[in-house]
Amino acid sequence: MQTNRFETFFDAILAIIMTVLVLKLAQPSTPTLEGLLEMQNIIIAYVISFLVLFNIWFANHNLFSAVETIDNTAVWLYGIMTFFISLLPYFTIWLANNIYSVPAETMFGLIFIITHILNTFATREVYKTNPYNDELKRLNNDSPYLNLPAIVLIIGFILTYTVYVPGIYIACLISIILWIVIGRIVRGDADGE
Image (cartoon, rainbow, N blue to C red; front, side, top):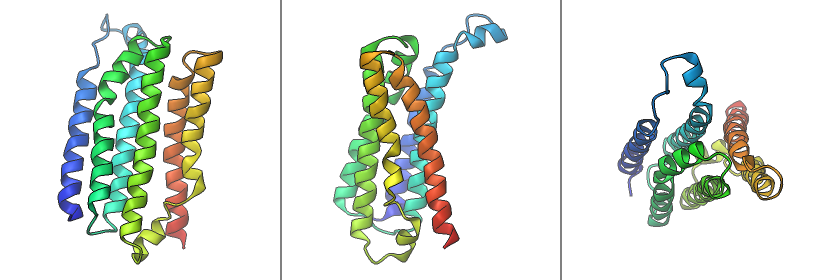
């Protein structure tokens, strides 16, 4: 499949999911700074989810700018990942409204872990189907540091199930920051070669 057609489709889906995500946000109870501060859990959950979606878009933009075709396995992996990220608005608001709920924390964290795993597999599939692409080699998406966000999420699960219920929520925030920073470092190393 040509990547430009797939990328257009994937970009449109991400834009719709981002729109649904923002539409799920409630208005503050009062039109004041205090009213906005009362919504801090909702705002932080929204920021986490938005950053995940944006980072997926940005990583795929860089990836697809280096390749012209992808195989059916990659398309299916991206399709499955799209299914899971389409659930993100629902679980973001559920978590934001129930920050001390273990089921809400668990589902929010599972969406992140599944998305990370599927994104990793899909990216590797794109690499596998383009083994002689020098531009892909330069992007260096095979760094072991890219798995650090998943490790932080697992630590968040351990915290949630043992001592601190919002552990997954905090781990998701740390993970997305790590995902962005590590991605920039890895791409920066590739740009410096």
